[in-house]
Structures are given as C-alpha cells and as structure tokens.
Amino acid sequence: MAAKRPAQARSALDSDGAVVIVCRGGDCGSRRKHPTVDHATQLAFIRIAVGDAADVLVSKCLDACEHSNVIVVVPNAHDRDRGVEPVWVGEVNDPDVTDDLTGWVKSPTLWSTPPPTLVDIHTFIPTRRSRHELADPDTVPAARGTRHSRKRR
Image (cartoon, rainbow, N blue to C red; front, side):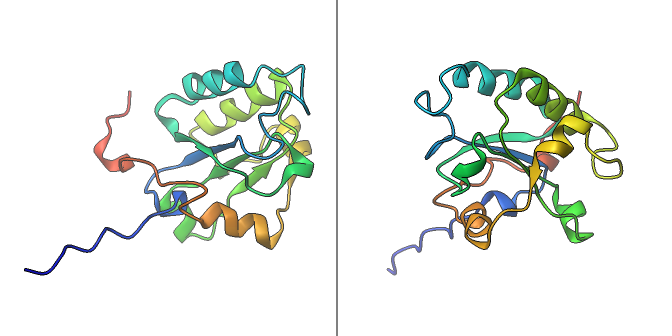
C-alpha cells in the first residue's frame, strides 16, 4: 500500500476569511526594542477586540523589523479575488493605534472605506522579501478553519 502524502502546507493567504497577522519574531514583540509595550496584553486585546471579524494569527519574523511592531490585515478570499491587497501597519506600539486598527478590522465596510488616520499614518509598503515571508506557511501558518464554517454573532 502506498504511503499517504502529507497535505500541502497552506499559508494565511489561503484562508477564506480575513486574517490579522501579528508579527512576534525579530524585533516585533521584543521588550529589548520596545520596553514600554506590554506585548502579551496587546495580543490579547487584539484577539478580543477583533472577535469573529477575522482570525488573529501570530507569525514568526516577517522581515520588516524597521517597522516593528508589525501587524498585517489580510482581506478575505472574496476581496482578494477583487484585487484587494493586504495592509501592512508598522510601529503599532501605542494603544490608540491598536484600538483604531481593531475598530477598522471590525467595521462592516473594512475594504470600502479608508483606514482611520492613525492606521493610515502607520501603513507602509513592504519589501518583496517581507511579502514573501507573509506567503510562507512556515512563517505564518494558515488559519485553522474556514470562515464559512463559523457562525457570526
């Protein structure tokens, strides 16, 4: 009998629903670089605040350390098919930026309205290498389930 092949690894970019990726590798999440930021509390806040609007995943280094702490908002499959690109937000080291970011992610008009001013100020264009890291399943594994299988509140 032939051995079963392992399922091909999927990245977060293969998820059906929206995904918020919180980088915690390299300088992101580093107390040495950001001693005044409570990284664990920030991550917990993001998970609670985003709720069912998106999956929240923690990544290894996205190779954008000059912008740490980095959070990437990845659109759902439908919006990606329409050409909507992930939004990279850097220097998310302040509760006000984190709050505006999570509020925007929860918004029913997420991709049809511009991000809040604080989020827009912190948005940056990633390098090709950073975009590659985002697509790498070893850096950011796919969300466990699909959005279609979840109930919305």
